[in-house]
Length: 157
Image 1 (cartoon, rainbow, N blue to C red):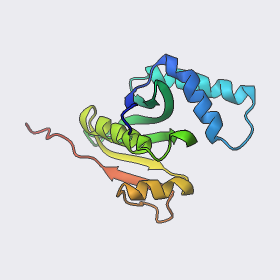
Image 2 (image 1 turned 45 degrees about the horizontal axis):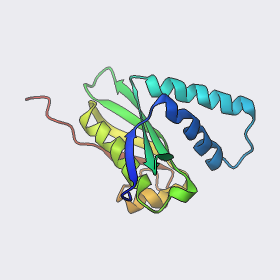
Image 3 (image 1 turned 135 degrees about the vertical axis):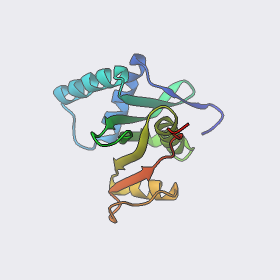
């Protein structure tokens, strides 16, 4: 990211700007009901213990965000699988490292903050090239599903 950019944990105040990003990236016309449902979802996710939402800012303006969820351990495991639900950057914020920084923030969260071993996500065909440029493997072969094994601290220590 540029010198004027930063990545930080999202707050309630960011919801309004995140909603603008959602509308910007959605090619279908949005109705008020759809916008309101998404706002309610963001309200819950910002405060949810099992979600991690980060925003990219430039000149004190939110230009992108990423959201991930820790699904918790399965019955037979002591580690979790997390899913990245969203990674969006506004068109005027692209090409300056915001997407990479957002992805790295989610990956770092999965590695440091949780007992997550696998981080997975779906990708639009357009975004597949972005993830492949990051060196990530294409789990589906068609550029729509990606998966990353993250390193965990040893639980034996």
